Image (cartoon, rainbow, N blue to C red; front, side, top):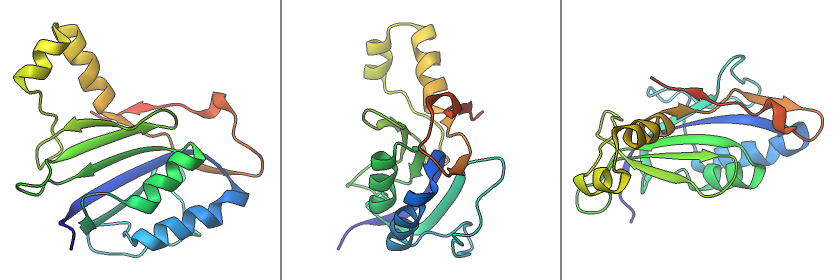
Length: 161
């Protein structure tokens, strides 16, 4: 049995309407809610001005496995925070910007970034530390359904303060 912790994920970007049913199926597999009270996800509702936010208190290994896999396949941005499980894994904020590999940032249980002394020494300057902090605080753009394939110009990011 896997360790289960609280986690939330924000998802944004542009998704072709033809791919939305597969995305909804991935969400159904991981079974998150739209709030901490457990309100079920309704595929007919998407936020008008922000990313789709999903959460759960009982996430296996702190990962929304199928959702994150689907986001990477579709090139959707996501930011996931998950609480740590003593002796198994730390609290972490994971940033995926729609391409490349997800980046992990250590956090507290309140999603505040932690810099180890080793990481500070690697970064070597306050400017580099601040740049990494800004990167770790990025949030995805709104999640938008379109009738055709997405274009690069609509992919923007916002900073979470």
